[in-house]
Image 1 (cartoon, helix red, strand yellow):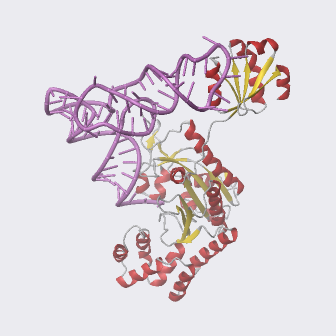
Image 2: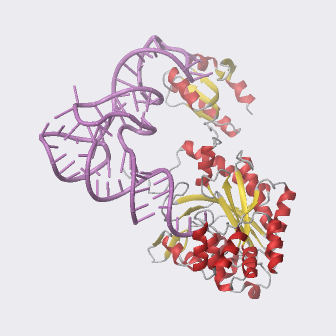
Length: 436
RNA sequence: GCGACCGUAGUUCAGUGGUAGAGCGCUGGUUUGUGGUACCAGUUGUCGCGGGUUCGAAUCCCGUCGGUCGCCCCA
């Protein structure tokens, strides 16, 4: 027997029902906020990913050559494809874009809890909006989805930072511009390794010990007002602060203040985020980040390999906020919290013919029921009644339609309500009439 | 890449050197026109794979593949 490929998942009907439940929440939250669906091939040119992040992601890429020696890859994430689609038709999309999708993405990487080599990742992207309204729309939609799953601010927290703010502050404190990147890397380790080790990393990044401990003190700030004081104290630029301040006020006004925490240790990938960065965590912090995203104002332009501001003259703005939400970690959390619904098969009518004669007799009923929008299935081939009734309850049938030689002879049907066990005998023609 | 634990029936698992087991499921029966709930009986195996030790291996050893978790890495 050939087993399922390592890191990939099978979805048996029971699993698929749960998956569908989750996706229906993603779709509902998306459409309620006005996001439009899009999709594209799982297979893309390898180049689309190589360009973006360099060697690291190439290692994790599933790549292959087709029979014409095209170098192709399975998509590891959706954003480059989105960018490709937008760039391809930038003249058709002059305004803002609010798009959503649930692509299956692939990464060849080591597996740990909550991470497989394949997952479905709900994406929200808001393009062409400079203000924090873009962040708000995406974050609010995501939180709405959490709430539709039965989660609340007691289970889920959103940690927000802003890369512009952090770099403003670092520069104000005296960190040299070419050291900022190294400092980001070190701060990313906050909470993962000990403070002395972080100091060491900071020193390695070129800071002197004094500055390093000053930086460490600052990044531990959880209170935006204190952050403001630090900015004022060192005369740093206030741009990043203004952004995050605005975002917090928007989220509070929206009614989601219970979810949000300011946290400098949220850095995320250095590759393309330019401003806001955020990650959702479970409140107990027992799992890795559930979802995350941020502002990537330059990515589309970089990927386009053309200067859109020149070529398209404002046809599409390069501003972008994106968000990804994988299905694997959230399933872990929902399982832990026992919030996964028990989804059983449901069916309106199960038809029970006692012999082949009744099979023919009942076929028009099945056809009509289905055409009228009822879920209906006929037991076939006819078996012992016990067997057939057992199957009816296994299939989750609410009603049964039973026909044997007696019913056939009288041109009748027996309609049974499986819940109340009540049976009524009706004329075949009357039943057909009643479902018209 | 490193480490720990695991892999036995369709499934969940027990079995730690001496004849391969249980629950659930499945099949049949109690009831040849009535289920979801009872009772009775039956069924299911390359013990992941390959090699080794042994009179004898599911059990011990080595390798390998797969799984789970942690570390590293990454987001």
